[in-house]
Length: 368
Image: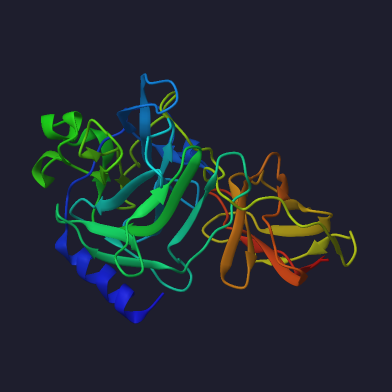
C-alpha cells in the first residue's frame, strides 16, 4: 500500500462522512459476535436475464462488521468491516456488470490501514477457495462524500455471472456507537436506487453505495448498510445485531473467489508445529496454535483452557491467503492455488473475548 493511498485514506477519514445503514436490532449478548461477521441489510437491482428473457436479480450486495476480539469493539480499537457483491443473473453485455463501490463512514469512524491491518480483497467464482490480495487498489473521493475503492488508475470493477468481489477494510471508532438504536438510512433515494441517504439520516451506520450501469439495471445505485457498535469501556456494550437469514451471498469465510484448486503438492512432514502465543491478557486465557500440512490443506488446532472460538488466518509473509472458522478449536483449511515451489506459511489466531491470540510455527508446503 503506497504512502499516497494511506494519505488518501487518512484524508477521507477526516471528512467524517456519515452515510451508513442499520442492521436489525437483536437481544443477543455481546459475546455472540465472536468470530462471526455481523451482516446488515443487503440491496440488489433487477435486470433482464439474457438467456431466459425474464427479470432477475442483477448485483446483490451486502456489508458487515467483525471484531477480532469476539466482543463489541472499544473506542479506539481496530475492527473490520467488509462488503461483498455478486452477479446473479446473466446480463446481455460482453464484460458482465461494471460498478464502483463508495464507502461512507459515519461521523466518529475512521479508516485504520497499516502494516498489521492491510486492506484485503478477493474476486472470483462462487464455490472456489479465496485468494486474498493487498495490492492493486486505489482510493478517491466519491460523488457522495465517501471513499471509492478502485483499481489502480481509477478503473471500475467488472464481474461476470457467478463471481463475487469481497473487500475487507480496517476501521476504528473515536466515539461510542449504538448501531440500529440510532437513525437508520431508510430514505426514499436509497430504497429506489438513486443514491445513498444523507449523512444526517444515517446515524451510526455504514453504507456502501455501488454506482452501477451499462448492463440494463433498473437502478443507479445498490446500497447495502449495517449498524456499527462501539463502547467506551465504562458501560455495558450494546447488543449486536443478529445475522440476517436472507439476501446473503457470502459466508463467514469471506464469500467466494477465483482461487481455484491447488496444483497439488507435498509438505515437509505431517507433524504438528506448535506456535507461540501470549500468556493471557486482560483476563483472557493463553492459547497455543498448531498447524500441519496434509496435501492441499492445513490442519489447525488452537489449544487453551477456555474454548477457542472465531476464525484463524493462513498467512504467507504479510499476505492473508485464506480464513477459516474454528469448530471446537479445530479447523481444516483448504489452501488457494499456489505457484510451484516452497511456501512458508503460518496460521494466526487473533483471539476472542476469553482466549488470547497466538501464532503457529511456520509450515513449509512444497507445490510440484
